[in-house]
Length: 476
Image (tube, one colour):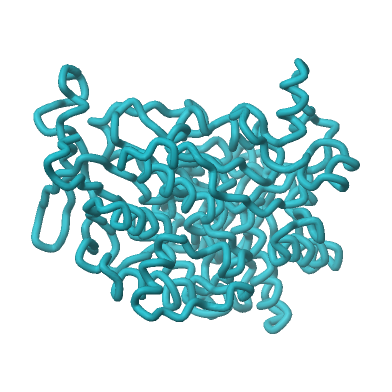
């Protein structure tokens, strides 16, 4: 990078992690340029403003951002309180964007459409690393271009939810039935009250977005008895969604699964297990949701469907960059062993940063929920640690980039033995150094020459997915 000018860092996405990245860039004496696709900062958070986080304020405020806010006379929220998405914006994100030095570096209604290197297509190599990035974006004034020395893509995944189809493709008829389908976490008790009250509503999914929506619908049904709730599970064991209960270091997160377990036990929610959606048909009365072949499979008839099956990254505007991605999760390859839901059975993911998130394209990094690709285990606090490390690396402070400055709360859930969970937390806590290890117990066994602690085995205790909720936040 050119040492004669101030290093410019383009940040894509104006959510919690994007704003934290801009705060660290500014604090390091670099020049941030933040591009937010929505008309206001934190556009995705505004879409789940009704949702209460299950992490308290102390886990939702980035340290560099807090230092910027403190200089303005900001009164920090009670660290023990649990904010909603709306309160997260009003008490933290909006003041950060509007009242600090960041305000002159933020561009809203600026959707990025492509990124390349000046004078270089994807094929050309010689001198590539020295060429600035060219970021093209679209706003009300037409196409724009900005140049940057480094790029942090923290655009999230909220705008690209997974479809209802069990094979990763949209179910047959899903697009045609879209008027009666919602994705993510609709505001069941607020703006969506009239849509869902007195209706038969199916919820597809097993993570926290699904759990929170099921609980909201059950509450609506208690007030409006004509409301009926159906839980569609692709798997066979609903207990996997009940979580760690009292063992969870985030009490509200543990309580979430306990409430759902009680609703299921009281038969206030009808469950359809091993229901792998293949067809959705719009009828005069509502929707017919099918699993299996159209002629011979199972089906349920509902008025509305909520699809809460997670999210996937939008990589379309990155086609001219050289990316290295895990073939299954579409996340950085070094991060994949830490978060792979096929293998990773402990709820706490070891803190990580620039090393794990680096790409073959020098100076380009994923951060936040997008860095996790299709994995559902992201926590907001993890994103803050990511961008602290990334910005330190961009600034040339390699020691700070390697340093871990975060201790994450544990879920109290692990698929190793019950005794190890009870005596040492989640398998002894996160691994300290081995990127391939899912937890400290697993790391120790590997270091001793073994094959790991057995996390993910069929005989292990049920595993609880960590936050798959909106914009990587811990949602209740």
